[in-house]
Structures are given as C-alpha cells and as structure tokens.
Image 1 (cartoon, rainbow, N blue to C red):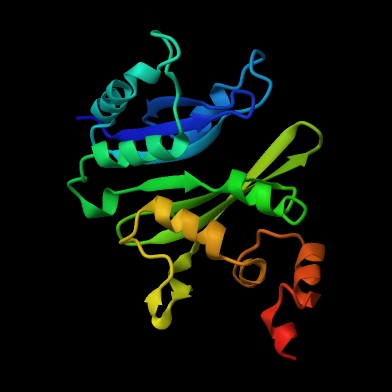
Image 2 (spheres, rainbow, N blue to C red):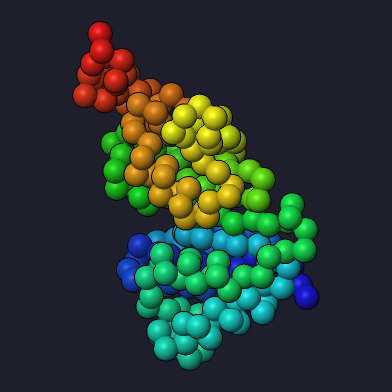
Length: 222
C-alpha cells in the first residue's frame, strides 16, 4: 500500500469538468503544476482525501465514474462535484491510524459568490480541513513581492470554540462529514459571525457589517 492524497480539481475555464487524480505530495502544488499556457485559469483543489492506499482509491473512483469520462486517456470527468465528493468518501477505507484520517473541502467559490465585495483580495483559497479529532478553517493568502515573488500564508483556525444549539454542543463536529461542516459554514454562518470569528473580510467590510442593523444583531437590539 502507498499513502497519499486523492484529489478533485476544478477549473473556471472548464465548467462542469472534474479532474480526479492522486499525489504523494501537496494537492495544491499538483494543481499549480497543471496550470500551463494552454489553460487560461489555474486549477483549484475542490476536495482532497488522505488514503493509506491512494492508488487503489483513485482506481476505484475512476471506475465508478468511467461512463462520465471525457477521454479514455485523460483524468477528466463530466460529473457533479458534490456527488463525486460523496462517492470518494464512501469508497475510502478508514485508515489504520485514526490520527492519519484527513480530508479537506474548498468553500472559496461558495464564499466568493456570497461575499465577493467583502472578502480580502489577498485570499486565494478557503477550506474546511478535518481529521477524526479536529475541524479547522484554513485560509490561504498570497502576497506579491517586488513584482515577481509570491509569498503564500496558510492559517488554520480550530473551529472547536464555535457552539451549536446550546453551549454544550459543537457547531462543527469531526463526527460530521467535511461536506456537512462546509455547508454549515457557508449556509448558516452569518456575516456578523464571520467577522467575529475569522479574518476573511477586509476592514471596511467589517465596519460596514458591524454598523448595519440588518447584519449586526446587537444593533437591532439597541
């Protein structure tokens, strides 16, 4: 068996298509390698899952999606992303070590559609990263230096402090799937909750949300 990552890549220039592949290294690094002059926009890691036998897991998923393959010698499939994530999770075998279980789902596209004017322009990806013990919000920012260097900063914030219904329960539980936790963050986390718990929005957006009675529940009560 060989341990590594099985990933699902998307590209804005290829709507409806998924690239299903595997790597021993970082999936984001693999996505950057695939950005060539023939592809106008970079690939994004929509989902990745660690497996102690990633070669076999990739083979199973390719077989499961075979009728949706665009070309026999390419790893591109015309298939809904959410269903592909579901199939990959169902096909994966639980790792021998609980601490080695790992998966991550990007919510950057969903957040961009909802909050484009408010997101920091330096943010290039936002993911929910999950093990069997922890759930993190991962924010990736890039800064161009001297016109040719790009520094990248990746920050993970543990979401264990976020309470659900009642202070005793966690809103983002590792017992839930990463897809469920991703949906919770995008659909249930309001703009005011986001500015109070994350660094996703720029300063002027935070001030706007804080001073708007329609967005700040404390303003409504005052």
